[in-house]
Length: 256
Length: 266
Image (tube, rainbow over all chains, first blue to last red; front, top):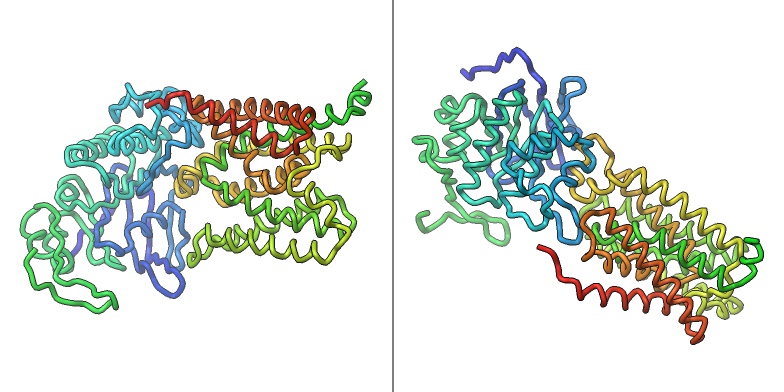
């Protein structure tokens, strides 16, 4: 029996939410709820509807069925997936944090301090490394003092030590700001270590609950394989088949 | 006093050129950031159709051009919502169809053909005091409009999703910007001609890039470089009797090439 989150202070909830593109449902029947100070992580294979769910939560996409409830005047800090600013736009770190947000100088300084970029205030953003830019995006989001911080694959394109730093930072933000955090992640190992609630998606919610509950859920084991369940080890997705050009499925003849 | 000045065709040309350069500068920066230069070309191609329509309906060319350019902008805006054809394919369809239709229309209207070179390359001698007034009115309106959407336009350029979660309406902002480009094209057609309008948008902005440390600086430098190009090009045109539009673009190109001497900052 899943432990339902009877949170004292819910800030966002999705109930039976679904979104389709044309006739095809990208994701359906999503139930989830986040409270202040809670970290909720969406996991699932590619195409399972993680980003779509996040976009419904943020209000970027309107659900075609079900409801999305946001606390009135909920402010959202969003860290999008795959964002790169080209060298054709002259933009330094501070200007990037201020544009469109109206964040105060003090809020910007504090956020840069928190993410460890205080010495990079006037650096052009296009010259930043993947990890630095990712932290800058997080800084931009938290300088707005959000009730909910949403991160869509925050460690994409970041090396391993950078990844640990970013997850540590996300926990620190939760502790200091007491905001709710909704993120998408591929990295089961770290997810399990630093999340309150895990929602496992595969076009619908497979299972949901605390990490320790999730790893024993048959639906999770089926989706990610025995090894992911047995230990809190690195994400080893079970690639037990390949797709031919015509879309037919072929079993793998070799071991992964 | 001012009316005496405006009697001189060269002063009128200079005022028009500088007004358009100032208007095109910040927009050209945005066009570069958003990688939209082919969009400018597409609207410019449709401008030819606009002038033909204006000619046959006996309405001012500026009105005809703004009408077709904004129609094309809205058509593109709507067409972008589907995912089956990429943006550059859509632009190719719109731009070349507009050109083909206008060339057919021109062939059917023998009287129009005499004006064709002017439409293609600019016809600065025909700039009237009224045209000068229109350019500067358009400049004020465009700068005020751009000022109001500037930050939102930048966030939408960086990421539409970021803009949407922060409570702005990126699509609305983008549409407004597209209509502003249509307006610039309509008022600058006489000066540079439809074939060279995009150059006026992007070359001064590109020349400004290496000197700029902020988006606003890039717009200011582009305005300065564009004004210098307009004044220089028109002077060249006056003394060597070269066509005004190509002369302005040539001076802008010289500025751009000179800017390459400045090393890129890390």
